[in-house]
Amino acid sequence: MNKKALVTGASRGIGEAIARKLAKEHYDLYLTCLHSEEKLRSLATYLEEEYNVSVGAFLCDMSSYKEVERLFRHIPSLDVLINNAGISHIGLLSEMSCEEWQKVINTNLSSLFYTSKKTIPLMLQKHRGKIINISSVWGSCGASMEVAYSASKGGVNSFTKALAKELAPSGIQVNAIACGLINTEMNLGLSEEERRALIDEIPASRMGNAAEVAEMVCSVLSMPSYTTGQIFTIDGGWR
Image (cartoon, rainbow, N blue to C red; front, side, top):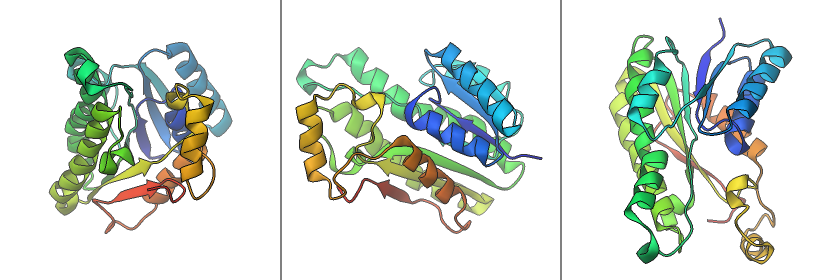
């Protein structure tokens, strides 16, 4: 039987690339998104037909525990959890509303608690499993004008290390991938001048792409079971 993986935020960008890569590796998939239901269902249909795997597509607000609970009613078994869903917010902290702050924290960090809480019992039944959290280089060094995003990703890194220690005796690996500047829709808000300035700082002299992050995910999935609690960085040598 195929292994089963949940990928959150899978309708575009890094999440979509991960879904495509895992389907190619013969994983049955559960995919979520918040808004682009039609696009996600189209992706699911394509992956099923192209790779002969089972793919479920679900509209789910990962920042809501009630919605995550509802999602897991459709997931009786799980081998891999990829926590990818995330949002950014660019602006001065002093001008950020409490609602905007909470939305970033709930989507980027609280969602890991929600999905892990529901996933762990399923993995404990098998005494094995792999959780990968998609983080950011800003989680370790911080970014001006992105305090909430940086704080949430810093939380992701600490969450990863702590949960890895908790679950290691049960054979469940927990790791994170900290991404640098990746060419996705999240970065479309940057001007060409801002993008060029950032690229000039990167030794690889370019942005990364979502397919490379997906390759990294599969590399981490294939690592020995002794590999846990790690924050792997993919950033072209930037940070």
